[in-house]
Image 1: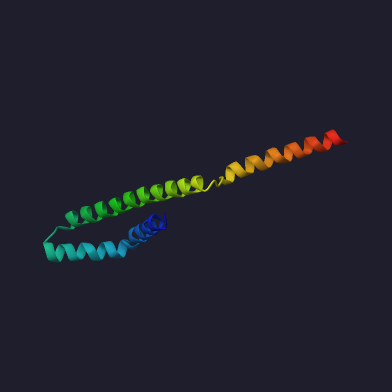
Image 2: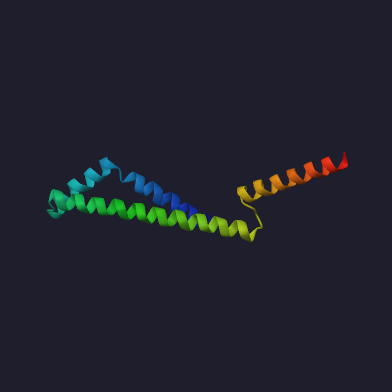
Length: 101
Protein backbone atom coordinates (compact mmCIF):
# COMPACT_ATOMS: atom_id res chain seq x y z
CA UNK A 1 0.00 0.00 0.00
CA UNK A 2 2.83 2.39 0.86
CA UNK A 3 4.41 1.73 -2.52
CA UNK A 4 1.20 2.64 -4.31
CA UNK A 5 0.89 5.89 -2.36
CA UNK A 6 4.53 6.66 -3.10
CA UNK A 7 4.00 6.05 -6.81
CA UNK A 8 0.94 8.29 -6.75
CA UNK A 9 2.88 11.11 -5.14
CA UNK A 10 5.80 10.73 -7.54
CA UNK A 11 3.44 10.78 -10.52
CA UNK A 12 1.73 13.88 -9.17
CA UNK A 13 5.07 15.59 -8.72
CA UNK A 14 6.09 14.49 -12.20
CA UNK A 15 2.97 15.97 -13.73
CA UNK A 16 3.50 19.22 -11.86
CA UNK A 17 7.16 19.35 -12.81
CA UNK A 18 6.21 19.40 -16.48
CA UNK A 19 5.40 23.04 -16.00
CA UNK A 20 5.15 25.64 -18.70
CA UNK A 21 8.88 26.36 -18.50
CA UNK A 22 9.78 22.69 -18.76
CA UNK A 23 7.33 22.27 -21.61
CA UNK A 24 8.97 25.13 -23.49
CA UNK A 25 12.42 23.64 -22.89
CA UNK A 26 11.21 20.26 -24.15
CA UNK A 27 9.67 21.91 -27.19
CA UNK A 28 12.94 23.70 -28.02
CA UNK A 29 14.88 20.46 -27.66
CA UNK A 30 12.44 18.61 -29.92
CA UNK A 31 12.75 21.33 -32.54
CA UNK A 32 16.55 21.24 -32.46
CA UNK A 33 17.21 17.52 -32.16
CA UNK A 34 14.41 16.04 -34.21
CA UNK A 35 13.59 18.85 -36.61
CA UNK A 36 10.04 19.03 -35.29
CA UNK A 37 7.83 21.98 -36.17
CA UNK A 38 6.45 24.25 -33.47
CA UNK A 39 2.95 22.85 -33.95
CA UNK A 40 4.11 19.22 -33.82
CA UNK A 41 6.16 19.91 -30.71
CA UNK A 42 3.29 21.66 -28.96
CA UNK A 43 0.95 18.80 -29.84
CA UNK A 44 3.42 16.28 -28.42
CA UNK A 45 3.97 18.28 -25.23
CA UNK A 46 0.21 18.67 -24.77
CA UNK A 47 -0.28 14.95 -25.30
CA UNK A 48 2.44 14.19 -22.73
CA UNK A 49 0.85 16.54 -20.21
CA UNK A 50 -2.61 15.01 -20.75
CA UNK A 51 -1.23 11.50 -20.41
CA UNK A 52 0.54 12.48 -17.18
CA UNK A 53 -2.71 13.94 -15.81
CA UNK A 54 -4.67 10.82 -16.77
CA UNK A 55 -2.08 8.54 -15.17
CA UNK A 56 -2.03 10.69 -12.06
CA UNK A 57 -5.80 10.45 -11.74
CA UNK A 58 -5.75 6.67 -12.23
CA UNK A 59 -3.04 6.25 -9.59
CA UNK A 60 -4.90 8.48 -7.16
CA UNK A 61 -8.03 6.36 -7.63
CA UNK A 62 -6.03 3.16 -7.11
CA UNK A 63 -4.39 4.57 -4.00
CA UNK A 64 -7.73 5.66 -2.56
CA UNK A 65 -9.24 2.25 -3.23
CA UNK A 66 -6.25 0.54 -1.61
CA UNK A 67 -6.58 2.73 1.48
CA UNK A 68 -10.31 1.90 1.67
CA UNK A 69 -9.55 -1.81 1.30
CA UNK A 70 -6.89 -1.65 4.01
CA UNK A 71 -9.26 0.20 6.35
CA UNK A 72 -11.90 -2.44 5.72
CA UNK A 73 -9.43 -5.27 6.39
CA UNK A 74 -8.51 -3.69 9.73
CA UNK A 75 -12.13 -3.04 10.65
CA UNK A 76 -11.83 0.73 10.60
CA UNK A 77 -14.90 2.85 10.01
CA UNK A 78 -15.12 5.94 7.86
CA UNK A 79 -15.60 9.39 9.32
CA UNK A 80 -19.15 9.44 7.99
CA UNK A 81 -19.95 6.09 9.60
CA UNK A 82 -18.46 7.25 12.89
CA UNK A 83 -20.47 10.48 12.86
CA UNK A 84 -23.65 8.57 12.06
CA UNK A 85 -23.04 6.21 14.99
CA UNK A 86 -22.20 9.13 17.28
CA UNK A 87 -25.54 10.76 16.44
CA UNK A 88 -27.38 7.51 17.16
CA UNK A 89 -25.61 7.14 20.51
CA UNK A 90 -26.42 10.74 21.40
CA UNK A 91 -30.09 10.21 20.49
CA UNK A 92 -30.24 7.01 22.57
CA UNK A 93 -28.59 8.73 25.54
CA UNK A 94 -31.12 11.52 25.29
CA UNK A 95 -34.02 9.04 25.24
CA UNK A 96 -32.61 7.17 28.24
CA UNK A 97 -32.16 10.39 30.15
CA UNK A 98 -35.72 11.50 29.36
CA UNK A 99 -37.12 8.10 30.31
CA UNK A 100 -35.26 8.16 33.64
CA UNK A 101 -36.60 11.52 34.73
